[in-house]
Amino acid sequence: MRKNRKEIGPVFIVGCGRTGSQLLMSSLNNHPDISITSETKFLTVWKRGVFNKLKKVGDLQDDENAKELVDFLYSFGPTKNRLNQIAVSKEEFLKEFMKTDRSQKSLIELIMELKARKENKQIMGAKFLVHFYYVPKLFDWFPNAKVIHLFRDPRAIFISQLNKDKKPYYPFEKGNPLYDLGIFLYKLIYWGWSAKLHQHYRKIYSTDNYTHMKFEDLIMNPENELKRISSFIGVEYSSKMKEVMLVNSSFEDGYKSDKKGFRKEPIYRWKKHINPRYNKIMKFILKKDMKKMGYL
Image 1: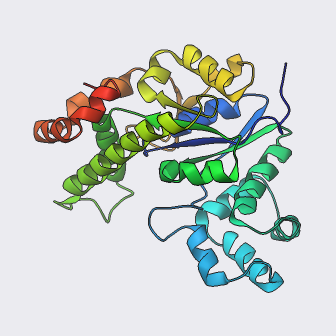
Image 2 (image 1 turned 90 degrees about the horizontal axis):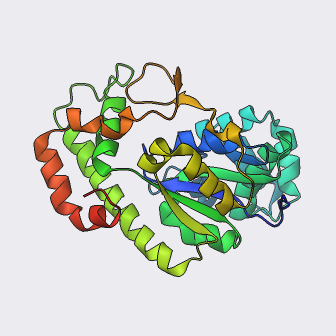
């Protein structure tokens, strides 16, 4: 029996980058009831997101300020792409936004809602990744939200990011002798931060609203994991959720591939590419959390 959209809060995918969020989002979007929008950079750790812009715009109750914000959304890459994907004109979006209370929450909610409405789906959501830091804020805004916190072996994340950013279309980084170290430190800190917050979240949030998923489990047992996540969200599992292709791989040319998304190779590939010294350092620093997550 389907629950209506009012009974099921927004579904948020959070976690470190390179944890298979694109794969999970694609699977969920294949469900007849679920619509997940991709990253919009609303909330970011660094001051580059939309909500940082809000501080400069001023009070959104002022119609001119609200219009300035919408103009920005249609010029800012991440939000511009999402709005173009759901074919919403600037005028239409402004009209819809003016009907809301013009808060940060309503801005996020409106984009999710417009995408779900276009696809005629009952459940809306978004893939926010580094928003694992903002999980309390998401629950404050949406008390009945469903948060899925993604994890992957930190060594695999490091190798995936390193290979992705060393491709030819990243000329600025190519050849930089300190780039490997920079990516390593960045991923080490973020993964440890994500793991510690997860241990905190699992103590304070209900299992009805917060869960985690390991990339390795999704790859090895996609049907079981997708059935579990479907049950967590509150919908029946659909076999279409498994019908996804490889997307945004660090080891494949192009954004999309004609290969199936659930392949075991990405689980073990890092072992062939990681510098033994980085492997030892990561295991030493993250030992406690890696053990808790089943990676040691």
